[in-house]
Image 1 (cartoon, rainbow, N blue to C red):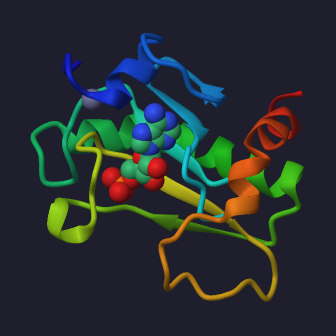
Image 2: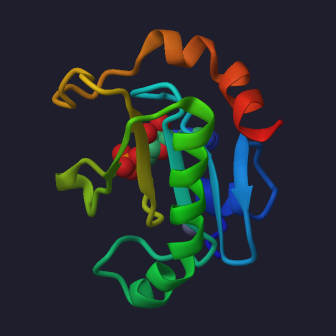
Length: 136
Ligand code: AMP
Ligand code: ZN
């Protein structure tokens, strides 16, 4: 665990998040700047910076169940026709939080291309409703 890492703080309960899945090794919570309704971050509890960091192989093994469960939940509860998984390693690749994580983006059939990274305002406004739909 790293003292100054927001995802370590969330995973350990020291900072709030809209959790949709938790297990001993990983958790999943809604992104506060969603690119799509249901945009979820899947995060291993183990603090590793990115895929090239020491311990990344262990973290990848530990996050597998959370990735599968989250993908199933988004498909079932939000009627997602597909799920895109995005993941950045290093600032040059767009990483802004340096704790390994996966973005899961629910995609309706015919969804617009994922070329711009501006948040979806409607998805942001309805974060609490989306959270309710995924956890009730
Ligand atoms: P990346 O650019 O791949 O490092 O993604 C980091 C993501 O974390 C961004 O999409 C942020 O919106 C998201 N984020 C940062 N802080 C929080 C937080 N406290 N709760 C939920 N999502 C967050
Ligand atoms: Zn961390």
